Image (cartoon, rainbow, N blue to C red; front, side, top):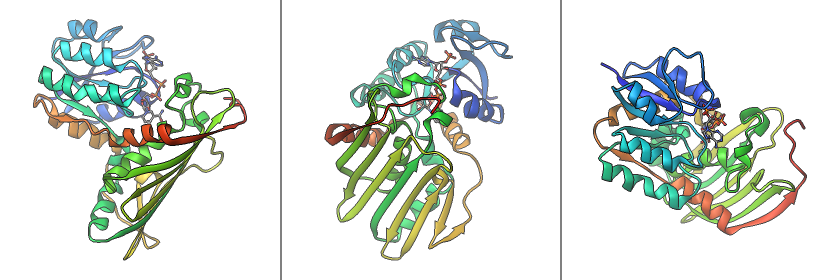
Length: 306
Ligand code: NAP
């Protein structure tokens, strides 16, 4: 028997990753969708989680694929219906809001998984194992993509507190897995003259003697870059393509097969019905610290059709 799960918010990531992953799952099946616009699906579609649960009584879980704002009401609604919950990154619009979710789920006795999909990239586990036998000296991160390609027309991406940190937090989720205890010491945030969220950010971080520098851009034309270089006392590891490929001293090494979202849903399937909670906010705290300590610069206006 597979668990009946519903997707809430049928936008880009739900269609690109969640639907195909659930279609291929042997532990979960898509039992419905909560959406303001979806139609012509071969599962029930409802406007609210409550309406969907009434139409699909065996529903046991929801996967929230909406933007990070306004997730609290969805989580309260799902918990009141006895549903387990998986949440897209970033978990909330702010740290203080995200911090409440674990306590809410614990009180309701339901499972909660605040996901970080980039942590599940194929090279991240092998990189962690390689690092465990070495002393890390320096980390350099270049996470540069074109917002026009990955978030076409999504105005919510320019809400205060998001911008380039929507992809940047993916790099920080890998970093906090590989280098727990990382602290942020300084940042420069570059804001388009007509927007309230940064389009570029440079971060200076450290853990003890290990220096960590990150460059984030949401304005990268041509090839996209999602690279993390880890220099140690005994060689250099480089994660490329968002952690999907691993190079050790310049030579690519084999990494496990499978996809980020395949691993996320496999893990969540194992949490369903157990009351387990995985709610690590450490990547998100670094984002908050960047806004707390960041110097602001203004750059040219942003245009979707540039
Ligand atoms: P999106 O294309 O804008 O889709 C979000 C969907 O959520 C909308 O289609 C809508 O679904 C629903 N929604 C509910 N309230 C909304 C609101 N106030 N504003 C806009 N949409 C609202 O966004 P997305 O790119 O899929 O991103 C969703 C989440 O996934 C974000 O947290 C993002 O960081 C994460 N994510 C995105 C990507 C990516 O490549 N885009 C990759 C990984 C993770 P209905 O019309 O069905 O109601």
